[in-house]
Length: 235
Image (tube, rainbow, N blue to C red; front, side, top):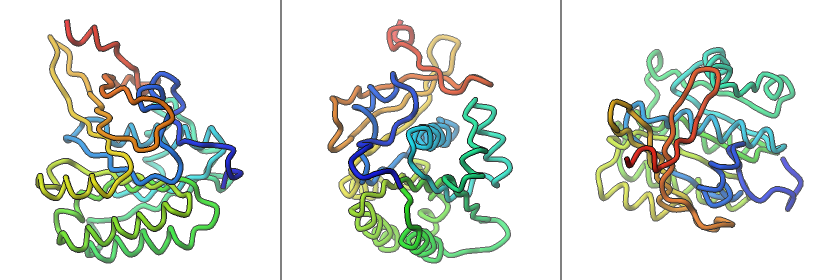
């Protein structure tokens, strides 16, 4: 874990993007990152993992979206190399195989909470993605999980939960948003003949700077996230 007080926020590693986020996501925050399918949710979470590692933090990823091998390949394709951090033990990856073993939502939530409690020296925990378990589980199970997350971030851990927007109805989303310190939402929009991704900074409680509300970006092979000036997309 980073030395106490030495790092205030989880950075994306991109100064322009951090500025739009109000300086980054403050350490000790519970974040909900939700969006449409193929809107860049995993890429944004991967950027936050990479930025935190570059800043000297330690990170854990629970993923239903990839294996360790495919995650490393995805990161490499975005020019975000993390193999060194994995070998040094500063990055840990725990794939959750949803297809072969029918874990219940409660089992998955409990596993993440227990592993996080026992994981000493971890600054950032990313769960990508909760979609399957939120849609299969009850509101009570989801709410209990987020309540546990609130307790865990009080110990200066930062937790980012990733999910597809369709996993929530409006009431559930409003409740979860109120429980979280930060809420980021993603969507895609067609502008002219270009399909762009839009990250809306709905809330970042305790941000060191004013948040920038809207971030428009594209994903380019071997480059990763490329911020697009909003004036280009609004023309």
